[in-house]
Picture 1 (cartoon, rainbow, N blue to C red):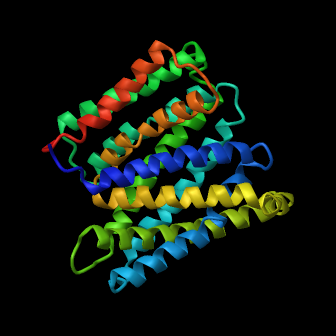
Picture 2 (picture 1 turned 90 degrees about the vertical axis):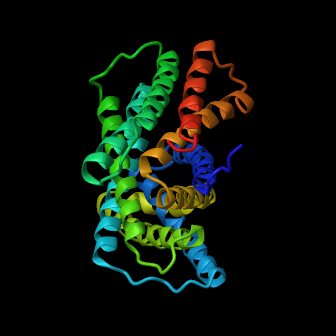
Length: 305
């Protein structure tokens, strides 16, 4: 037996909340535009991010670290990239071959590992690389079953999906860099939670301002709809921030590529929702894909990888 590290629990929390939030965003995308749906995630999530940082500051006893240039620039880059990634992902909801695009978006696992190794000095072991490939293979298997084959490889969904995956990968790496750049006397779980929450609040504030300006300039009529749909919007904002708390904390504790690989259990959670809530029956091929995803995730938990 071995002790499960805290980043694992934070990742599982993030994956669960992301699956739930995505369902909420898909519902909202039928009522308002993709850009306005993106605004909802940040605008309604901002109060919860502020509350979370206040709770940590009150009960951990840590002095807030000084803001530095690396934090500001990395957080700024992560914030803008996440906006682009989210808009692209929501655009997939409006396309017929949504599942194909989603599979491309999941390329973020391998993209995060590759870019992290080349540009961010993240050292990935061969064993971990193999685990990532197994995990992505499972995702592809499930998607091929659901769409009846990989057609439309040059379609808009493929472009949106790959673009989303790349932007999400860069977001993960930049937010980890931003959080770790904050100097704190003694790094531990609570200290990492504090710097992660500071990064989260900075990014969500930036994203709220940017998306609000974009909506006002490009789609002014959508702003009133954002406030009229406050009930589902509040749900998306809350689950989005809880998920982000999980992602940000996990990526401060562990390399982004490892967190993203384990985080693909979100795909399984989504399938389970389909089975138990919508009473769908997964095929044997879908089940084999789920096993591959679980196998890839479990391999990362082996001590000493």
